Structure formats: C-alpha cells, structure tokens
Length: 269
Image (cartoon, rainbow, N blue to C red):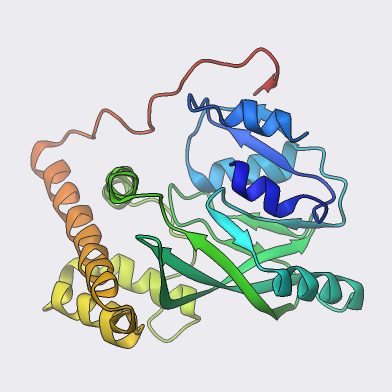
C-alpha cells in the first residue's frame, strides 16, 4: 500500500480505498496518506467495484482502477494526462507488464483501466471483474507495472483464494464478465475458454505452452518457466476444487475470506 500511494503522490486528484476489514495495517497507511477510506464486507470483486462507483463521493472527472501491487510509469502518467486533455474518448486502456519473483516477465496484458466518472460499470462476478465503459476507448503508451506478490508464499495463498472463488462461481453457474464467444472480442474469447476449459483435450499441456511460448515467458529464463508452470497449476487447482464441490455437494467454508475488525475511524457500509 505504501508503494502505490507514493507512486500516486502529486499525480492523482483523489484516492479512495474500499477496505474489506483487513488486519495488516492497510487502513493506517492509507489514512496517513490522506486517502478516503471506507469499510465494507467483501462479497465479490464485481460487487465491490460497483459499490465503489455507486457510493463513493468521487469528484474527479476521470476514475482509474488500481491495485495496491501496481505502479504507473512516468511515461504512462504523461500519456494519461495528455489523453484526458484531448477530451475525445470515454475510456483509456493500458499495457500492464508483469513482475514475478522480482523479475520482469515479457508478458503484457492489455486492460481498460480509466474512464469518465459515471460512464462505467462492472458485471456482478466473483472474480475477474472487467470495466464496461460506455463510449470509445483509446490505448495509451507507457507501462502499468504489476508487482505480482512479494514472494511465492504470498502468491500461492492468493491463488488458493482465487481458485476457490472460481470453483464456486462455476458450480453456481454465475454470470460471466461477458458473453462467451470463441470468435468475439478478446474478453469474450477468454470467457469462452473459461466456460469450456474442462472439456478441452490436452488442456494443461496446451496452457503451459501458451504461457511459455506464445506469451514469450521463455525469454525470462527459469523464472518464466516457473511462472508458466505455476499458472497452469492454477487452472488445474480450479478444476480440482470444482470437481470436489460436485462430488461432496459442499461449498468451501472459507469464502469469502474471514474479515478483521471494523475500524472506528472510517465509515462502515
């Protein structure tokens, strides 16, 4: 949290945090930087973001979605400012570059991350929330750096929670972020893969080579190999958890994650 707030200092007009009753000092750090903090029980990523867009007193003309483990490059900050001044689109997309085990991976994710305030909503999904922006979107240059976990212990714990949410979502046949279409947009193709993944032949082998060769993780040496292997295991764990739920008829008891205590210094929802 400290790192991302330092990164935004002097650039962002205002910063909001919706805290799901964390117990790691996040609220203390945020309040120390003048962040507007509220607390609300976590029900799902899409639900949490729609709450933020609906209830927070956002006054800035543009809103950006940013995670605590992300940083904006100086080039990206300048390009965003220039695009906003041009005032000819309603959304901006960026390239996010991934860091893993303290190494930069040659893997880029193209994501919509900024929009005119009031012109965006999210599908009510447990995980993999995507902003749906009303109006044209422009791609800006520069990098959004994703420092994906400080160590493997943290990364594995995060993936364990993530795959539990995916398994519950699939078991409940919850709404996906977009319509699954093999020949649709990149997001629709991803949703098609998500819906039909368990029926694809040689899926884990194909997924490993997609990450390792197609996305180019091999250029990062052993770290790229390890990331590709572990990313494949994330899908495997998701499918195993889904099978377990179907076999036992029981949902995992630790989702959503158990909250900490409410902080009397901030507003509760």
